[in-house]
Image (cartoon, rainbow, N blue to C red):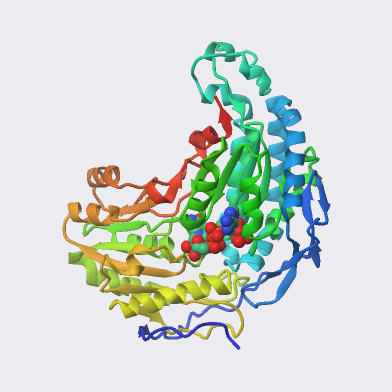
Length: 518
Ligand code: NDP
């Protein structure tokens, strides 16, 4: 029986079978998955002291992939101790030596890219084309990029001082005119970092967290999300292959309680968290009375603004990418669409046409555009919003296209029109393939309405006029503003939010700041 929940009555668009329909293109690589995975602590896989395991499910067919160890408080403690023991030696390595380890990790990710992509898709439900072309290459890129920073940290943070550089392994750059001591910075590692990541980009989020921390001489305890731990555990195998010193990275699987134990551990110097605003607030409260450093990358309800002078066809692709990429499980998803009133009908017509051509189904098929929803719980959350949208008076538009698989968690891409700013679908993060379409008349109105949210993670602006783009972008309260594009990521570009979307940046020079004490 399908676990697809009943949706409210919707404006449905028939999908006409095309004479150019795609043939199935299933991924041919088979990935071996062990029946059971232990915790990765001190460079070894060890059974949990808790003696507990939980099942990891493939959301596209509801089959159990394997069992994962559930780290209890004693396991968290063992992982933190391993990281603490390893930290001084890791920090004292010559920066170029640290960089060599990181380059090796990046290269092994590239060499094992196809296996990692297939595993990511089986574990999380995202289309293989996205795992293969976005998640895994970007994960490798983050290690490459940050490897380059290892021996340049003193140049990244200029200021006063000087002698602390040696303690973090920075010996100066031979042949360089400017000596580190002249630059006078003290970029010391923070120590042991507890890092908690979500299920939407599992390996990529692991790379976002680990790479800057390691580059700066820190050691890490990483907690992946309960539903998507498999690629992090493959990464642990890569650490063994490249002889990363034991304890430099420890990976502890488990649910929220494991994350909470890590946050509350006395010997953790820094917490980096990506996930919901609700849990982020709880973590902020837990860290407030301590001297732990904290960065939070939380939710979003990002506006995508289309002006009448934009290239409409190009903007439609950006809207589609912005909301339906990764089933909408994206913190910076362009989930609120603001369209200038004069082009509203045209945009809705083109959006409907483009949406009905999206292929929903088997994530391991290379032609699939929209894969499975990550978990049964997330599907129920999305349906709660679909019901609320219709109940509050908005009109739901969805395709009633080809049949969905009989097992697994599925939601067809859809959008709401007739949305009021007070509607739940306009205010709250849905984290699914659901777009709220609204209109505006003037640029001032667009800015006011775009900023009318407790979040501030990202935004998109579409216009033919460069000056208008720059003027609007400056007034949007968002950490990232994409212009005539959407969802472009690069390791060199800082990412992070304003307001309830969190604080701190990840990526780029700015992302290193959270991992050093100056
Ligand atoms: P959570 O915020 O609960 O999960 C994120 C990570 O935090 C996971 O590893 C989770 O573990 C862990 N965690 C949960 N509770 C605690 C705690 N008390 N202390 C420390 N760590 C904890 O997100 P959900 O998976 O529950 O998703 C709920 C909603 O959050 C989504 O519908 C979406 O709106 C939003 N979300 C936003 C993300 C973003 O990037 N902005 C990412 C993920 C979700 P585990 O998963 O194992 O329980």
